[in-house]
Length: 459
Ligand SMILES: [Zn+2]
Image (cartoon, rainbow, N blue to C red; front, top):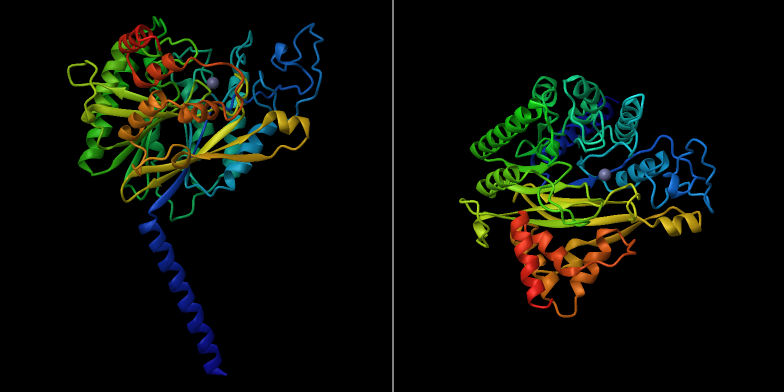
């Protein structure tokens, strides 16, 4: 009898020790982490499935324009219904990721009206509460987009806006419900310090071997602000970014940078996003710290894309390996600018501290609507679509791909690249040469030179 009890006790104790050991092992040795990159949800709490895209799927005053067909899952030309965000979250959950980058524009277009911005806040609160509901157990790092502000492209003139948004986002960033084996991202006090003064912050991941630097690049965006507070915060954010990178280097950590609007050019009209002196300053900083920056992640264009950042210390363009950085942009969930909803799952090697690969997933809205069958599909794996000897996604790999897109005579990579940008919803023609130039050159003057050169060559 006693022997039996002892046996059971022994087994229980052993299994407890084994479980604790395995948790410890997992915490220490999770070599490959997965993270999600999702963006531009543009959630529209007033979405109406029966209205057509000319009314942005709203019942506007006096308008009786109803659509030819109902679009319960989302309509090309309109922002996202709640269903679409919930469905994206459910699909992302099935990928088993360790953290998520949510790179801005949670709120739909046109949410600011005569009442001010309560609808913007309502949309932002819905996006974050639904995300937290599905992912209470992993950290989520959101940032501000141009639609997540008191007015479209209008930055707050006090910390009140940031205070309200932080009440939605701090459960996601701090991840208080995360299991004990998940790295503590930051503290409420530390988060508040920068967040309330400009909407930017840093967070630890991967057992503190890496850090995520979440920027609010709206402060560097080229819009004619007259508020001196904007200039002040723009400057403070640069100082903070450099301090963070110095600190990371000293602690032998590596960094992921994320924000909404990237530096460089817009593929729609080839205008350049940021104030040019800020682009130079930023590219100088990331060039200086390129050995510790694992990758930069942005959105805003609603299209998946690659970008190079080439600069030497004097500020002139150079092809030197040492001064190259790169950025990845992701397609949006909102189908407003003619793309299928999409997201990416990245693989991160925390030992090598490098981005290894990614998979893109998408929802074919036409098929979903036509057959009332909203099924997310696997789109492609980066390394399979663009095979290379290089085993990680870094600036050299992106440079190689950029060259291949233009130099392959059969246009193999180009054709699959262009389909991937809109997650297989491709209706318009693209001009290959200016797109190649905008991907390659982060400064407008270099882009113009590149475009001119290819024009002269008769490209
Ligand atoms: Zn957007």
